[in-house]
Image (cartoon, rainbow, N blue to C red; front, side):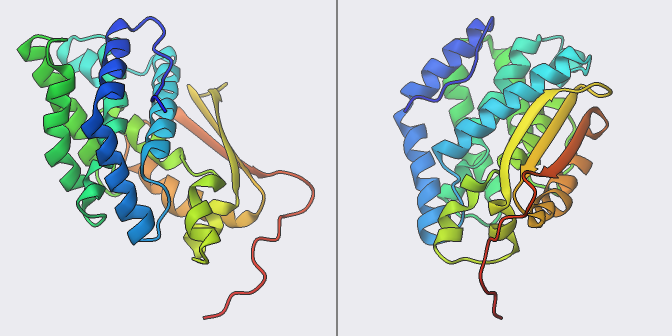
Length: 257
């Protein structure tokens, strides 16, 4: 299935996506990452589905932040345009988990090994050497900084970090949860029904997280909060969570240690 994002006015992003979708090695790397994550480690999806969700969330976040007057790093520091910032976050999403094809532990570092080459391949011919070098550097920073405890230095890296964290709806935990991996990570992820993004009233981004059980608070308090605090955009994002329906969903029958 092709990876699609709303390219809108951004012709260069459209060309980038054509190259991404034609890149057989990249697609195989996503499959290899998922073999290690799902089949071998019993974790949630880190392959093409996660990439598609993260890329689209990242692009939506960028456009909301840009509309709210939040400057992008490649614009303020290098004089490029928001079009280039969109390429940074989308390719950052495409590459951020490639290192899981090597190992889940320290995968951010392993991702850099593969992402540097793939970024140059996909951008080759679309930009002159100097601009291409800037974009590759910014993409690699976003990949390196998507780890929750790593500090982001750019808006684009912060967008990727938050987008990665917001892929938290219950489908993300389906594989480990249905396989019997009952822990706070799988149960809290199963408690998240949906994540909605919109323009905020007081801040550029409003994130609404719909839950079926209060266990979902763990996803926000222990995972999302840390990523936001290590970003440059926390002050521009409002996050609210609420339980849908009058009663909480019964997620597990028994938990034994």
